[in-house]
Image 1 (cartoon, rainbow, N blue to C red):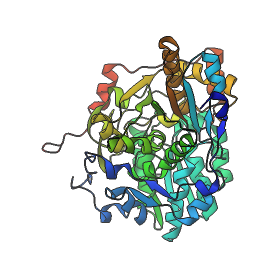
Image 2 (image 1 turned 90 degrees about the vertical axis):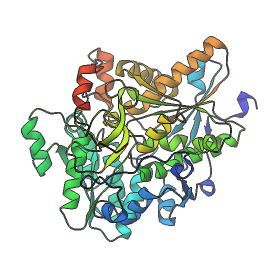
Image 3 (image 1 turned 60 degrees about the vertical axis):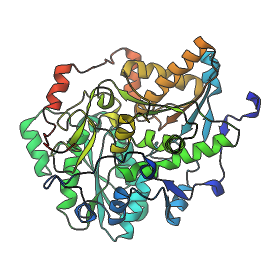
Image 4 (image 1 turned 45 degrees about the vertical axis):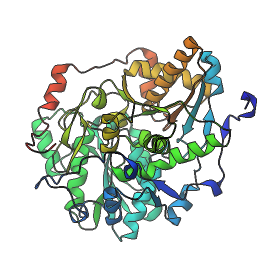
Length: 461
C-alpha cells in the first residue's frame, strides 16, 4: 500500500471497540513467581487480597488461566466517551528525520486526565461501586493516575483519597486543582496523616517522597477505614490487563491497512503503558508467530530494569504490601526528583519483569531527561501535540531507531505509545529551554543503598 493511502489518523468505529481485555499472563511460558504475603511469605490468596483490593479485582490479579476477560457493558459505555483512541502515522516526524522508517503512535491523551490511566481507573472504580464501597485510596506520581481515578470516582459517586508524591505535589499544582475539581482529596506524601508517613518523615524529614512512600500511606488508610479499598495505577496484573485495550486497538487499526510493526516501544515506570501496548503483539510471540522487537524505555535516574536486581522485594517503602519478584532498585530507593514523575517507581511489573528475564521483552533502555526533552520538543514542533515527559521517553527511542533506519536504509515500521499529554508539565519544558534542567545518573554506591533494603529470603527464589 502506498504512503498516500494511509491516513494520518486511523480511527476504529465504536462497534470495533474491544469487548474483552487480553490477559498475557495466561499465555506466558513461565508464569511470574507468586506474590508473597509479607507476614507468612506464602503465596497470597483471594482472602489475603480482599481486605486491600475490591474482590473482583483481587480475582483478576490472581487469574493466570483466562486469556480473555469480558469488559463489563458499563465500562465499555464509559470507554465510548474517548475510545477507540487514534493510531497516528507520524508523517511530519518522518519527514523531519529524513527516515525511510514508518512511524506510528497510539495516542492516549485524548481525555481530560490526559493519559492512558483512565482505561484502568474506570474499571477499578466500577468494581468498587459494584461492591458497594464508600471510596478508594491511591497514590500518584506525576498526577495522571490521580487525575484519572478522580474522574472515575466522580462518575460513580465514590470518595477518592490520593497520596501524591511530595515533589510532584509541589511541581504540579494544577494537577491537584483538576483532581479536586472532580471531588478528590489530595495529600502530599509522605504526610502526617498515617503512621507510616509519620515514621518516614521522622527518619527523612527533608525527603521529596517516592511512589513507594505514597503506596504505603494509601494502603494503610484503606485497610484502617471501613468501606475503603486500595487501587493502583500500574505494576499490577489487573492493570496491565485493563490497559491491553491500547494494544488491541492499535493492532486492529494497523491491520486495516496491512501494517504490522517491526519495533514496539513504550515508556516503562511500573509497566502499564508498555504492557498494554505490546500485549496482543506479545501474544503473537508467545504463540510462536511473527512478532515485533520490544523495547522498554526508562529514565536513567530510576533504572529498575537496566540496573536493578531481579529479586523478591516489597512494592512499597513502608513494607506493608506483598512482595513481588521483579526488577527492583529496592523499596527504600528514593529517585532523583526528575520531571517524569510517573516513571519514578523503584520496581517493574512482575509480568514485564518475567518476560524481560525470559527474553520475550527484548530490550530495556535508560535515557537521560535532557535527551528526552530534546525529543519531546522536536515532536511537539513537528507533530503538534505536547507530549508528557513519560511518553517522551518512548519518543526519544523511536527517533533513535528511525535515525538508525536513515543510516542503514531499512524501511522498518515503528510503533510507540504516546501515553499522555504534557500540558501540566510546562515548568519542565521551561527548565529545558532555559538550560537549567540537569541529568542525574545514580552511582553504583547510590544504588547499593537501595539494594541493601531488599529482603533476604533464604529458600525462596
